[in-house]
Image 1 (cartoon, rainbow, N blue to C red):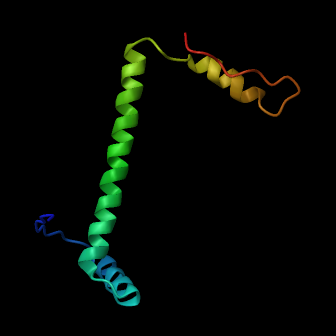
Image 2: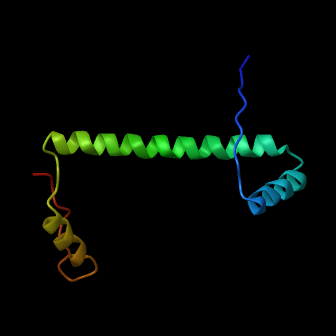
Image 3: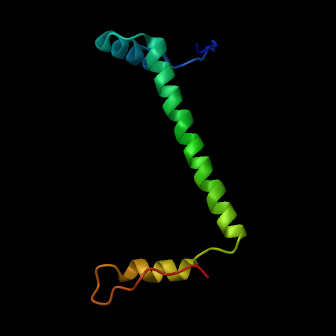
Length: 89
């Protein structure tokens, strides 16, 4: 059995009206829609933090590609002499 907890948030009146409309249209509670939205938002923030932590660890380990190399590679796209992707140095 999962437990739940109550939080209170203040939202602009226009957003509340939009949530009311969606809840009625989808025959779901406002609470369920709000929980779904918060869950998705939190999951996305966690995903972004994990990506940044991994990137920070790779940079600390010396795994990086100089900006100039990436720029040169990107500018070659679509040209007659497209360069291969640069490697970490």
